[in-house]
Image (cartoon, rainbow, N blue to C red; front, side, top):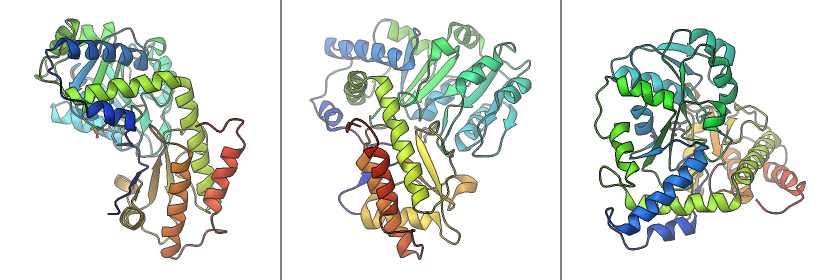
Length: 380
Ligand code: PMP
């Protein structure tokens, strides 16, 4: 693989030098006053990122472990899915011996709030995904939360690839559980997982009988109340996250969201200018990941490998039925306009080698530049 790599994926995303530098500082002990201060600050930053007054629980693990920690309310749950990560909720439920009700929509569709609510009657909890990373769809969590209100089921949201990158107002929208991870919009290496729960979700989880140990919410909450962690935490990652969240706050969450929308727009326009079709929605809702369909006869996995091995440009391939059919460009986290221009140019070069001709040389990058040039500001 070329030495210089461009991580333009929907996670893990590039780590800013400031974050890397924070993680390179000498290790501190997790029972020291220095760590206590770091943890206290970081937990407060996380509450702001989650837009919640509730405690955000911190676990060592990838995003999936926070998802697993939320699999607690008992037997009658509904999983609403239109993609790979929605389906993961079902796999986790089954691993715990729960057979969920399933509301399935074709991959690439946005979940239909009324249809989800109709199937949620009587269920204890509904499990959904915010940004469905496999398809590029960002589901309308706010509308789903509203539609579910009369049924009274808890709403559990996987925000692993959205938190910090697109609006998600946990308390205001009435979401009961939000889970996330460090390695996507939060610009920190993989290894930290988060879960926050409403009072209602806490009450139900207290009665849950599923087995738990390291992922037990109560143990973590009791410890965090004393500004501690129950086990040795990934101290270095907490230091990195603290810096990353500080950078996000300094920029302002809304400008981060606006940047992601803009990078998404440029990705879509550029891909279309290359003569390619989009799999993800062609609108600003798709601000985390753009999924581009590969031309007939071109294997997306081959494109993915050539991009990586020849140019060090790491995009993402397709999951499940989309394997070989799409290439995904991530535009969350520490990314800017030149990442998108790089992705589009590299894609054009590799597709050219595989016999696909773009309408004109550089068409994708040129269109992206046009999108950026229309802006009043050169930031982003
Ligand atoms: N949910 C979504 C929406 C994701 O994008 C991912 C990671 N691609 C996960 C869950 C799983 O996260 P992790 O790989 O950190 O366990």
